[in-house]
Length: 127
Image (cartoon, rainbow, N blue to C red; front, side, top):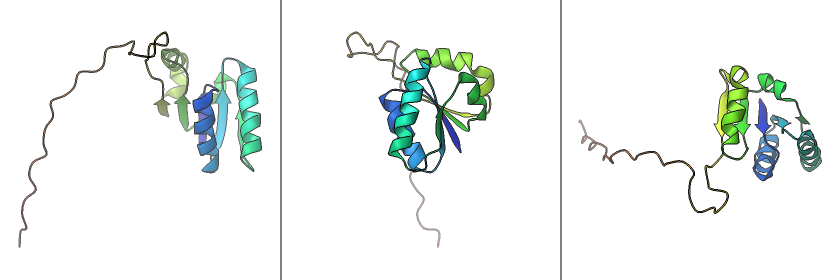
């Protein structure tokens, strides 16, 4: 399986390490190519026999899974730019819409909560 991660920060390193430990191929993209190159080099040294490389954004077409490991709202921009290549793929967006100036709130309204419902009681034995 080929996993492509957009972003080359701490989360990309953690997810990339687990991807490689699971025996999967890893492709790293960052808008600053040198960051993706550096992370690919570090991960290839950390995980013996790792299939890891930095790539251009066009390489997302070969991915089975794409992880958006970029700050909010950049994930939306990346998803929009790659929309054609992402069709039919598993896309995981790990961004959090926190207010980076204070780190104490979200920059979007939370989704409304649905009413809580208890599951129906289980029927008794039928013997």
